[in-house]
Figure 1 (cartoon, one colour):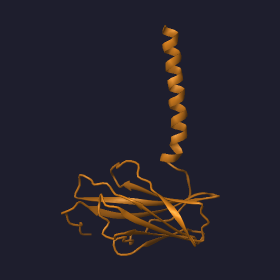
Figure 2: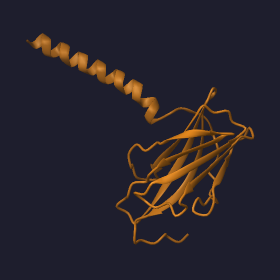
Figure 3: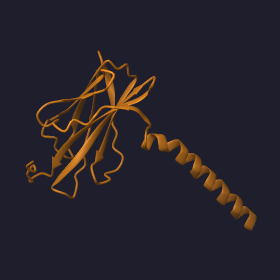
Length: 160
């Protein structure tokens, strides 16, 4: 009976190890090139562009531009100088883990991608987020980070 428990434990650990090995690239993808974060970017006023050192550009926008929480949002990406086969937007809370939130965008042609997503509500009145646009290319993943702030309904946007 003890041997059966030991065999079951070994089988469970092997299955857990394989599952972790398969899921890790999904949770923490390897990025081959990253655009610099533009501190002047304000997605509440207009789409922003991440520039790569090789001349490629990733433009990202969110509608509505007020970026309300727990409300469907429209994400738009325009690629220039990058040949992609898939685009995702990885939404992460800055300084607070808000869980896995990575909607895939659909190709619209001409380097345009669009899709929908939602920002969850936070216990804070205002929350800073990073939307990292992940562009899957034949050479690997290219990324561009964009930062923005959300506010709970009834709260005010913090002043800079």
